[in-house]
Image (cartoon, rainbow, N blue to C red; front, top):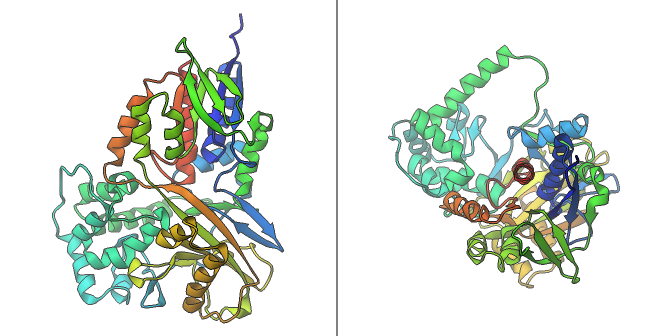
Length: 476
């Protein structure tokens, strides 16, 4: 006897949806489950914010330019897909980054991690902090741990343990560069739980970082062989991952297929997916791999309470402005991977990555590629129709030029807009997600996946999509 063929539909062709569809295909084959898979994508391409452009010898990333290797899911998927040999790490010759202080690029002290020092010498010599600020940071060694905190903001945590300067001059710009968000409302528990663990285990962030440094040194002595860089990309850009995934089930992808609503079948087993063009698709299994606001709209007629909770997860917008120059036109030595900008500097930039330094062989000889990040109110002005793309380029170029001493115009610029793309994990986020997951369990054969729930990075999104696929197959 053979099982009756089932159908699974994945809505959303970003990295989450691609990972979900791939895992459905592979795992269904492993389990001997006959399964037809359809991936619905509203646009004319898959990959979401991940997009690489090759132009005149430059490798230009419109979205993320790397993923973190300490979370295993992206690297493991690359190995499974047979593209691990195309991975590259950051430039080993240049490890440091900068933070802006009074209009100057100051190197982040060696061993400094996000908000606290893991090495005292470089930290004490750094001009980023005043002596009063340094003294307050060191007080972390003597401040008692606080127990029984349900959740608190990143800003409150940093100020409580390390003081205002640690937050304003280092933690805020570092975190802003990752989440494009206001750390005053960002949940520590949902974004940086490791710091909570440090406080609980060691009673001090600094003590935890010093212990971590000793352990890393011991591990380095005890192990041999190649080790991955903290950040990984591909020789030809991040599009490599998207293209490889898409090719593995290319016949299953339906482009320009926007979903309006879904309905549960009268039998309670299976779903009807209603497209914008009037077509209705039947499916046994359904994965919504979309941002929370879009998921909320699609679910509004099926579960108003679930839709309402999803609608409370806010998103922010941002843009990247890639700027190409001749090397001779930039006076700064570019002896780092880039810089971040504290809000107190009152610039329009969130930060800037020296792309051609961060990853080697990204530009023609004697050229430079910079990636400026514009977020917050500056980009929202663009969304509201107050700024054109040329305005964004001018805004980014003005700040970058002032900071790096550039007098010449760029050879070309490329603007990539990411409207409402970054989920914001506000205080209480984990509790909200638990409520969302509980309500989703009342909808058999349906799962949610994406950057709205348990992590915003590429590895997190891949893991979310894969777990969603396994959950669906387990329910058959």
